[in-house]
Amino acid sequence: MAKIQIKDRDGAEHSLEAPSGTTLMELLRDEDLDVEGTCGGICSCGTCHVYVSEDWAGRVPAKGEDEDMMLEAIGEVVELRPTSRLSCQIEIDDSLDGLSVEIGPVA
Ligand code: FES
Image (tube, rainbow, N blue to C red):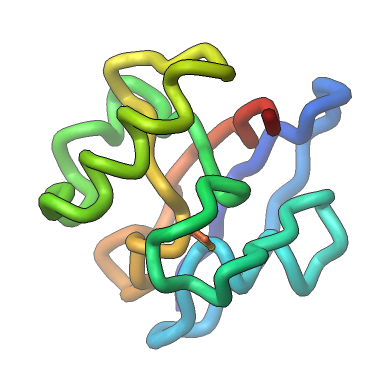
């Protein structure tokens, strides 16, 4: 279980408990925070884009090649930042307690 701090696209802050073993995308989608997760978490839609806070950027699991490629693709239509991640690729565990993210724009 980890408590996650989330800023939505309207700038509102949310503090949510996330069970270990789920992904950040599933949490955002299931809490109706306007994250569709259209592809179901297989790294092929980009609708789960988040900006991880800078202090957490080096503490979340590293990006894989598929995630890098998908981010590059959505970067043609939305603003990417150095801390951009696909939330479906971030699996929650206790080490992420206190993680802070901002939901990214959709194309
Ligand atoms: S849910 Fe589709 S890329 Fe993350």
